[in-house]
Structures are given as C-alpha cells and as structure tokens.
Image (cartoon, rainbow, N blue to C red):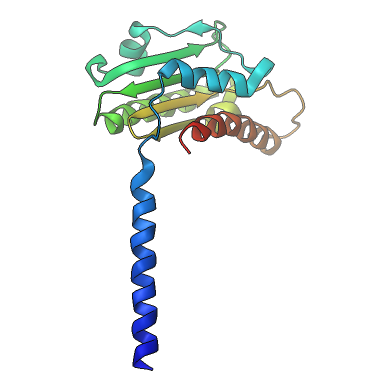
Length: 176
C-alpha cells in the first residue's frame, strides 16, 4: 500500500512539473510587429471591420494616457464617426512594461464602458470589449459587425460578445 501511495505522489509531482513547464511558455513564440497583429484582426473581420482612422501618438498620450517611453511600437485604428465606438489598439510594450500598458488600456476600457450610456446603442459592444495581453503585447479590442437584428439587451450582449471573440481568437492564434 505504501508503494502505491508513493507511486501516486511521484506521478503527481511529475505531472505538476510538466504543467509548470507549460505555463512558463506564455511568452510569444514569435516576434510580431503591432501592424501584423492589427492586420490579423482586420482579416478576421473582413467587411465587418469598421475602424478606418489611424491612431497617433497624441491619441496614446492624451486619450489613453500612456507614457510613450513604455511603448516600443503601436498600431491602432478607430472609427471616424464619433457615435461609432469601434477601435483596435495593438501595443508592443518595452520589455517588462506589459503590465503597465495593460493597466492603462483597462483604464481606457473602463472609461469607454462608463460613457456608453451616452450612446445606448453602443452599450453592448462597449461592455463586450476586451483587453488582451501576451507578454509585452497588449491589445484593446472594441470591434465587430453592426448589430441589426437583436431585439433585447440580452441578445445584443450575446451578439457583441460573439463579435469581440472573433478578434480575441485572431490575436490568440498568433501566440499559440
């Protein structure tokens, strides 16, 4: 009986070691440019990708509140029409600054979600938006097709979640 218990404990320890090894591979296996990641998101949405105006450094500092010394490169687009909330922002943070950049993007997302009440038709999309982080790569995804079919808030929320997930899947696929 003791041998069986010892064997089970040894097997669990080996399994834990292997699991630990998998978790340490969260750093990107490949080095992407911010523009390459943005392009993957554009491609995933096809004609349902609405942003068309490029974001600039002024947007990053004045709206997002980023310290540009924390950003190695970025690519982002938003809609020209102020009533349309869609935007995608991809940042490659300076090594070790990914968490700081993620915090800044989460603050921006919280602000967008708080302001969604001004345009109730955008609330579901704003609330479904996501901030993703893979190492020092951080993305804000507030994007997706226009919802022309939902009849209830629940349907609108589900539609928006499905739409944002397209972008999440596109970004995550690069880092698998």
